[in-house]
Length: 53
Image (cartoon, rainbow, N blue to C red):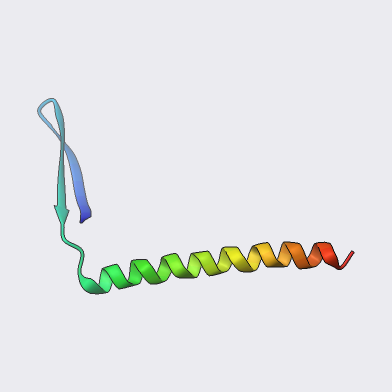
């Protein structure tokens, strides 16, 4: 589900959701994998730079 909007209504808040498309799900998964890879490269860079001193 994807949050479309939220707004105040009477004494509470209302939310509007919709199903995510398959493309949106795939894009989210790819972004997550890319972020994990970037974090791994950053960690390896720190390790290697520590070995070079």
